[in-house]
Image (cartoon, rainbow, N blue to C red):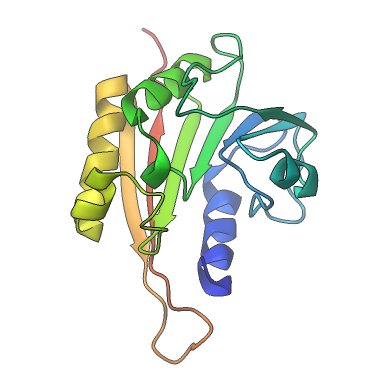
Length: 182
């Protein structure tokens, strides 16, 4: 993602991510795109790269795990107040299983925010992601989330302004919540 897209993700997190609780950043990489003033009880990152986890200054703790070989999350049921997956869905070989795990570890009412740009690494992205048009990727993501049980789905995109050359990547997001029982 370019600087403009990263800024758009940070703005999204500012408005949609609950602060103060326990949050999981899945496939977090070296940067979580959080607002600078965001505070959490605990902010846990999970990624395949130990180096990326060490470089991510936002994390209070980290878990090194390859979700393609082990899609089960090492966390208790209903133990997170929010979860993020930024620019990672394109690389998951078992996306439904991972999203079902995210549903399991989120508390009722907690959001899952999945965001991505139109840019991805073709050599690493799964075939279905490469075959879909950007709008179809949003529909695919929404279908995965609905199938896992997420409700109150909200989708959106932020297109870069024509006069801002440092921002080329359109940002797309799908937000869903684990329903509150009863």
